[in-house]
Image (cartoon, rainbow over all chains, first blue to last red; front, side, top):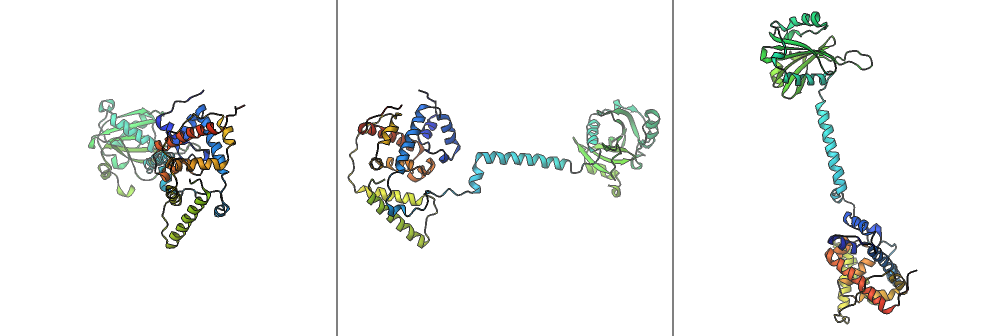
Length: 257
Length: 143
């Protein structure tokens, strides 16, 4: 004889297992019936119950009473309510999962709400700005605006010009390096608020190869650093410092933001 | 519940009459099973006046596959009388369960029993019914 080990509660539920499977209305009963189904004892009980129920259905009902019932359904189905549905563990789990997914999408959307062509590179460069030490740069003491010639003559970088707003700042050092996408990046360190400038190629259209332009200055934030980015002649310029947008705002012409 | 169709008819009509009155007064309970609960209490009330069986040690036999052939030989009224002879709440539990119209939670609400009590009553009822079948009907071997 095949027997199945059931917990005390499952044994109690198995004893109350409905005669018709469509009467199984909850998860605990369903799992108990599923578990007990393979035992001979439960199979015996179910056949016994079905036979008794079949006999019960043949108990004669006086016609005076039978006339009152137009259908076989004595009990109206339970009312469907939002409250009851919300208590269903499956619905609850799906609801939580959807809320988490919606939250992630919202966060992603808010993160990229102020995105512009080149913002991804700008964020990466802010991370580099945070980890750069001045000793890594070649010492250069000059006006930042004059370094465009150095970049062109020494590294053949065209249009790597520091905008007029930042051209008069005194530099500490500079370097040119390749980022992980083999783009040529120029980095300049200036004395003013230990600010750093970055010049890098603007993002390009994948099909036409044309530089994706945008107007004015755009802000990016990363790991406590803030950058103000502008694009000119296919090259982006970013002024970066550790702090907040308000620390950088005085340097950015308001009309151009 | 009563094992007597005339009594059952009387309870049925009383229950319906009362329900109709309450509906006319607009005071129907806002509960799904109130009519069944009401009918059950009326049945219990009606059977109070009947002769009550003395509490006896009722024989119990484990269910066997041969029970199916034994049940087939029964008359429906024999079963009705057997169920109506059971002490309450076992009688209500068996009647509601074998009516096959309610799930176990609904039976618990109607009878105000706990799941362990309902389980014990049903399991005991099955074994007692099997013992009664064994007493009154010969077993036919299952082929």
